[in-house]
Image (cartoon, rainbow, N blue to C red; front, side, top):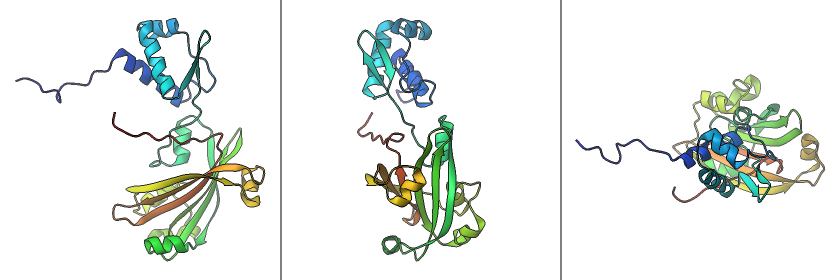
Length: 241
């Protein structure tokens, strides 16, 4: 019996494998921003490919804005970000990517939001305020997460977060995000947020607003984050591969 195309294992070219490996090293911090990549002949010997394959792979990495190539000098890493998996929480994703980030819980208290109430029919909310700090560089983000004050979450101010994680807390309460939307803009720091972030009042930060809902359309969480633009970037892909 003949095997169909669907049954045949996927084969990746030497170029694709080289792109994948160098991309992995850049995203995980093995190759850091500003670091020069080995010369073409070194990469060719190390990965047992031709120099033409190396040049093609480097061209693809440059197209993805991971490196920049200077004629006669070499290729340098330009990527200075990290892909964040929202399903495991930002702190965990940043930690897994080699960033020494810790989340500081500022407070947990009852809150109201008329707009969210009108949109989702939730009468009261619990606000969880956190600061994320790079041990070397200081605060890099401040966020306020609003979750429904229902079920197990109603006692959140008294009980605290499960394993110091809002993601784990929501999962323990049976709330699982199925879809959502996110808006990105900018916001000038107020006197209060500037003090928290140890910056100047009026300094411009990225403002990310993310609303997650469950499979039935009920609110899971609404998060507003202020992010240091020097440490965070947003990447959108579209179209088919």
